[in-house]
Image (cartoon, rainbow, N blue to C red):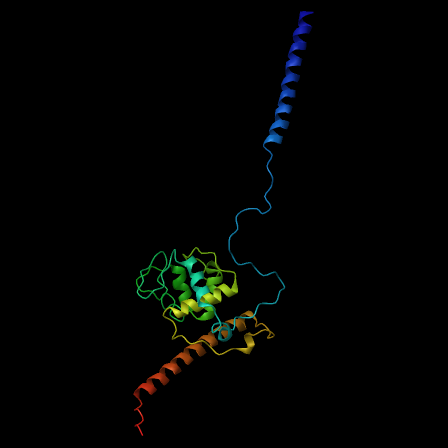
Length: 231
């Protein structure tokens, strides 16, 4: 008889413990309930990949957009670069090089700055910071120059990039000519294939440099020509 009572006590204790565990689980689940966030993770301002099958976008028509660019907005956009760069003439290098005169200048233009091996390799392929090259780098630095030390994710907004490039041009690069408007780059024109776009970029850079050289030659001729005598 006493053995049966002892067995009943043991079973009762086990059932009570199991019941208590279930109650604790239900109560804790109600108290500490977590709601899934609407958006997972943290937002990173990185350019989005275009969906497969979409037509490539037209390259920017610099002859149209740069004269109308907002320099004040470009200067404001440069604020996000100031943690690493200076842009004034003779400014010291920071984490990144000084950017005075960078637009239209040679890649790795800042003497004495320790550029990455990736940037040195890129210079052999694209030696000049033309408008198209600068735009591609600002869109996604790590994609355009794989292995670059620049950890900035990029600027996906095209208008912001245009204003920023116009502002950088105003800081020591005004001698780098703005090309004439290009109908092939304007709305309604057919976007070039990837190989054609690269060739067009190279031709555009050459034409821009030739325009700048011609302007410099005209200015020199004007300065050396004798003044007309007064009547």
